[in-house]
Image 1 (cartoon, rainbow, N blue to C red):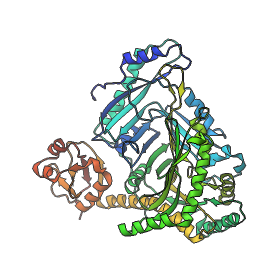
Image 2 (tube, rainbow, N blue to C red; image 1 turned 180 degrees about the vertical axis):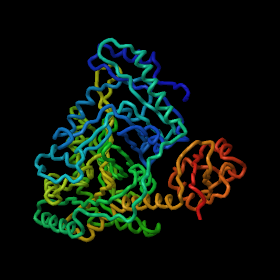
Image 3 (spheres, rainbow, N blue to C red; image 1 turned 120 degrees about the vertical axis):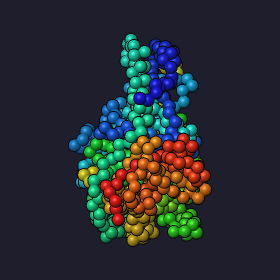
Image 4 (cartoon, one colour; image 1 turned 90 degrees about the vertical axis):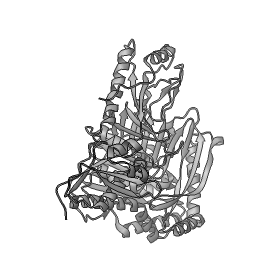
Length: 606
């Protein structure tokens, strides 16, 4: 049984907050209640597995960056209180934002003095598919084939969130005390919120981790493109004709690959986050399908009253050596084509921001900085502005969506040509994935304050449905684009996800051949444990006293498995500490940083 939680704010503080705003125009009807535990022996992926085991819908939202201001938080949630969907065959065929705004506007979260919380404490988590643009810009609407048959938008509403603060290495579990109209037994509601926290923390502290079931791998599956090389190059030729006529300046066609796989979607996500760390990593289980992504690009974010967007345009592959890598980066910086395309899209972003922000505050914070990712390098800029008082975060989202980097310029005409050429719904691809937090009530209850918003563009994103993985990528076409080079660029962008599927399948095939199953278990009685030398960064495999004699396990395979399963910050230990200890349990007490795993074998292997 987990120890009794210490909840914040206290019951008396909750009563004071509600009393202070009583009789005001916008009194709070929700009060956040939170409890914390250390995060040094827990990762977001382990937390997700623990709390989502019995849930049909859930999410994990994290970042590879971990500074005080960038990627500081990861969020996990399961069992949403409600789900909002839109699109033919799933829900209303309309702009999904008013539906979402109406739902969130009913929530007024209390401002509690002295209570420090992450930007997301509850709210709507999900996606707006690219095809929703037909509701924002009716001129782009036309009949489209629906290959994936998923909702045009889907948002899950959560009252309970698990938030990892990577900067302070703490886990905050946050839930809400909902205050009904009229008299209410606040103490009873508070005790119920405490119980929710208690149960969630008990799940997190349970040493058992329910692993996703992994069926046997079917190797050598084939990728199928919806248009192929000839089709994509044909699109480039046609778009260049439109550019030559002055119809558009730039546009972004795409191709989609379909690839059968028996990989469990979460096992695929675990591999993706290890081979393609990105600012936006996400796994969303929508019950009938799953979304796995590692996006490099922020779409739109609200920080206080400031709206921020990050245009990315201009791509080269990573080099095989540091010298080649820097040479390619320098070529990207000096490419007249890429610079011209990038400046055009920065101007488009400024125009989108100006539509909802005070133009005097709109600025380019960063211009054409080379950022490096696992398989490619990009030119990245940042544009921001102060939101006008009469505008909301939903207005800002609608103004910027979809990004010019996945549509083109002028945006409306570019999207019309994309629809004409592609003829199929893009689905999640090039849309947005992220969250909209609940609105807040000011301390005196007189004002309503917009909640948080953080969304990324659905790039490097896979949709898994009915044992098929769907991948999609495109590239910006300008007057001097080479059709073959543009086709290759889409393959470079798809490369990280293609390699991810291949690598994950090879891993589980190796496990099948070794007749071994690896699962997290008790921290005190492993058969094997792993130590990383902080000086050399080498991994060492140690057998415990409990390991059965006469069983052979390939230790090179085990090292590879530990590299895959371990987050580096959770397997740190000095070699000296390992030498001085005689058992995994004592080693754990020395370091407090080692996660142990059982390796079960069906018998001796040769």
